[in-house]
Image (cartoon, rainbow, N blue to C red; front, side, top):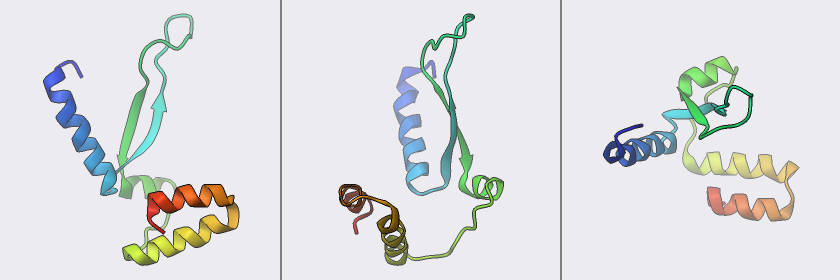
Length: 94
């Protein structure tokens, strides 16, 4: 974005949309020069959550926050170390 005064509100809007799961990061791409060397900032692609879920065969569920935290805790407990569980607990508040 070339207009620096609009960059911060734009970035904040992206964060808000990600936080509410209206959009998700669907990929990134590194910029390269003519020699194929990484050159400059990577760009990020976004998609709506519904489009991303359909494209990736992810079933969306209607679930309240407490049940979602319990499902996440049970899922990660099967695969993560205690240290990882501690970090995830801080993020997801379980």
